[in-house]
Image (tube, rainbow, N blue to C red):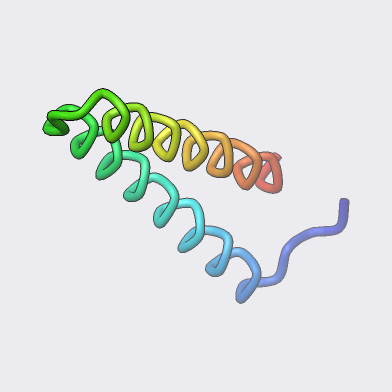
Length: 61
């Protein structure tokens, strides 16, 4: 893979941070949820955000 330029690196950094933030928020919302269905929804969203972050991190290797 070719080296990333500065703009691509900054964009990637922002996307990784955004997915990390979403993951943390979704986990927090899941802990607060009263309904098991709502809790499951937020847990799934948190897992999806973690997976996306992990996939984006691969561009840094």
